[in-house]
Each structure stands twice: as structure tokens, then as C-alpha cells.
Image 1 (cartoon, rainbow, N blue to C red):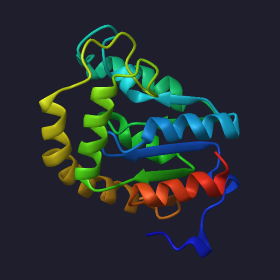
Image 2 (cartoon, helix red, strand yellow):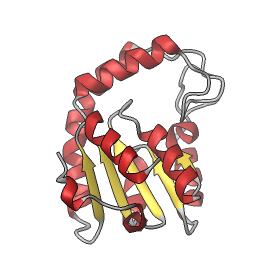
Image 3 (cartoon, rainbow, N blue to C red):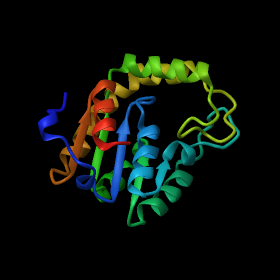
Image 4 (cartoon, rainbow, N blue to C red):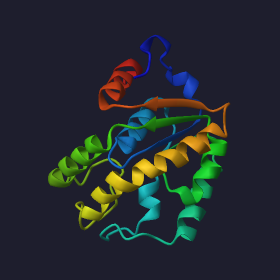
Length: 182
């Protein structure tokens, strides 16, 4: 848990904030809250990586990369999502990374709750998504994310100058919401 005596204030995050983490860890919700508070546009990579009005069908990587590169050319952005195919340039340009890293079981629980609720206004939701529930995503959360965690650590270590806020629980994230008044 972050030592709250040394907590990071909003002004230290800079103008290019990258939010990474497991699926259903709260990345899109945080991106929208920060966007509203800081007046910086939020971009949800899931919306660029998938075909609208589908069952979360993936767009070709080339389309994601083109859209991604247009976003990171801007002076200010808040981007949530992982997508290793274009992660390197994003980290290179970011002024800070917020890593939402609760337990995978917490993320699975949040995913199940989100699927049952099926809120069409859920932050980061794909426009016209036909199905919110997928065993494939549960499997990805449980088995792929722990492997990707290692990759993320390596990428971040290559940028020792990068401000990293590593949040390891939903309780810690809630404390930051209160601290930032968002």
C-alpha cells in the first residue's frame, strides 16, 4: 500500500497520464474522473481496439496503432488500456503512469458484477457492444494478466524518470479518489 504521507498530488501527474492495469481494475472510470478534474481528454483504448456494435471483436492491430499514434501526438491526454502492440511509444511520451494492480480475483469479481449490471453508460464501454460477459476474458484476467505484469514492470523500469503511482488495491484507489477530490 502506498505510504499516504508521500501521496502524489494531481499537479505532479503532468499532461500525459497513462493508466494501465488488469481488465476491470477501474482504469476507464479513473480516466474519466481525472479528465473531468484536470480538463484533459480521456481516451479508452478498448474503444479503438474493438469493432463497434460487435461482441468485442478486435480491430486489426494496424488500425489501433494509427488511432493510438494520433492520440499520443497531442500535448495532453489520459489514456487507459494496455495493448502491448503500441505500449512502448505511449510510455515513452507519458509524464506519469498510474498502475491499477488489484488482485486478479478482485478484477474477476468486478467483471462479473459489471457483466450482470450491463450498464450501457459504463465508462470505457464499447459502443453497441452485444455481450458484456465472456469466459475468455475471465481466463485472460486469471492467466494472462499475471504474465503481462512482468512485461509492464520491465517497460516502466526502462523509464526511471517516469512518475509511477502503483495502486495495489481498490481501497487504496478509493483513498486517492478522496485525496484528489474526484
